Structures are given as structure tokens and as C-alpha cells.
Image 1 (cartoon, rainbow, N blue to C red):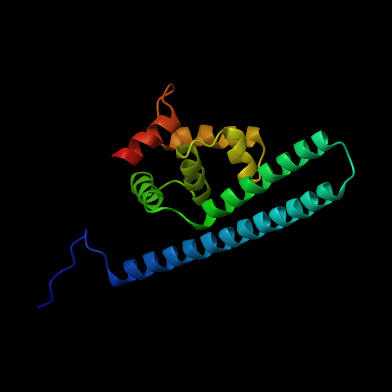
Image 2: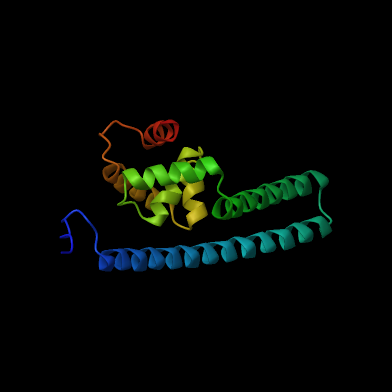
Length: 166
């Protein structure tokens, strides 16, 4: 006589649905990663072209130095963003896994923002990296504050830092 299935046990159909759901999530994440990587590559290429044009200008050396310095700084930020999108360290992956286990309701974007907050990026930098306004980023942080179940005076950054250490 077959053993009856307990309510807490998953059926093969449950596993199939879960696998299909996870595959869909992976496809969405891959698509988003491809889009962001392409956008960053295009920005970096444009910044390099601009830098070449600045070098070719016959202007005051002090002004040229400021312009090239600003352009190089922007290129470095773009390279850092690209690295963040593609190369998570082991501790970053562990942090994101821990965060997702504790807060399964967070979206892919919110997970990325959480990582950037934990890495000390400010609201303006995060907004620029995901292509929204600073005000839009503030709204997302407000909603994340609620999703994380934090009190009115609790800091998202402090919470995420503590979570990464636990």
C-alpha cells in the first residue's frame, strides 16, 4: 500500500512548477543583466570617444586636465558598475542569498539596490546606476524599508550591514 502524501510534502507537480518559476526568474535576470551590460558598454565607449576628443582640443591645459579628469572618473564608475553587474564576490553572493532567504518578497532590482547600499553607494549613485531619478530611488528605498519590516527610525544600511555579518 503506497504511503499517503503528507500535506507538508511537495508533489512532483509542485517541484515542476517551482523549477519553471525559477527558470523564468533566471531568464528575466539574464535579460536584465544583458540590457544593463550593453548600456554600460555603450556609455563607456561614448566616454572614451569624448576623452579622445578632449585630448585633441587645443585649450588651456588646466581646463583640459579638469575635463579629462572628470571623464576618467566617469569611465571608472562605469567600469565599476559593469563589474558589479557581472562579478559578485563570494561574500556578496552569500549576503544576497541570506537576504533573499529572509525576504523572499524582494525583487531583483531591490536585491541589487540592497547590495549597493551595503557597499556604501549613496542614493544618487545608485539611482544613476539603475537609470532612475534620485527621487525615484528615494521612493524605492521607502518601499524597501517597509518590505524589510524596519521601524521608522531604523536604517536600511545598518540593517543590511548587520545581516551581512550574521
